[in-house]
Length: 410
Picture (cartoon, rainbow, N blue to C red):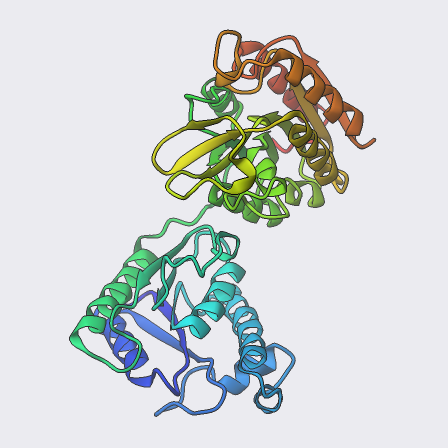
């Protein structure tokens, strides 16, 4: 089995022995290797397939300019840009099937950019001395990247770090051999939701859309799910999106670190993809359950979802912030946008008799959002709860109308 090639990226001047060990592991298992050197000052013991000069040139710069900057951070950002652009170009030219990047903090900084530049579905592995560290912000992590701690690998080979390197080499080659990339033979619907204990619209919507000939991918609205959704939306992968849970955007604008970033709820619109939108769980912000409660939330009611995740219940002013954030994100949409506004609740916990039932707060939020919506958006009031059949029926009615008009493919 030598049909898969792995792009191995690293500073071959300072990590030559480790990178060569890694390439040997991949080759010993029958894989092919493409090497890319992202060094600045030194040179590898033997030439790589793509040299540091190739990398710097791809960024529109040069090794001479990187050295002349006199700043290691600036120099490595030149290399990170070049490595990302070069990796993407090589992938589109079918030069490799998976990528693995090795490094400390410098190499990891570059690795995050390289992995983020490649499409979802390409096996991506980072072997890092700071894997799983709080140094790595969630917004820089590619949605499908894998990481392994480079234990004992700061300087030189030893049996401890070889254990990490050999696992990683086997993992990326195995992933490249086993990977089933999205084929998009059927038009794809992207849907945002939470688990069915909170949001149940997926139960009627998914089979109904599948019966209409669509494939449906449901993304978990807890940060990384939204990043994966936005990544595919930016590639124009969706025929239509059912972006029915806005909680990640609420997290972002209210300062939670459990978010999908500043571009949440924008990429489908920028590509002209039709959007069905609802503000599910608008009244909650997620915080990390095992960390001390941030000072700004200490006077807010909270509910423990599990040991990983707590919910903070927003006040009316904070809910208004969410309403205006949603409206702002939809301004740039170039395709049709329909916002669904269920008047009896937006999460299972705000039904009548449930802990978060707040009809007056819901009424104020819906009015605030409706008033803020830009002219390119239509709003649809629904006399029901987001988890009621009437909500799913209205969403399908709009969707079917778009299909009949040829706005949605399929």
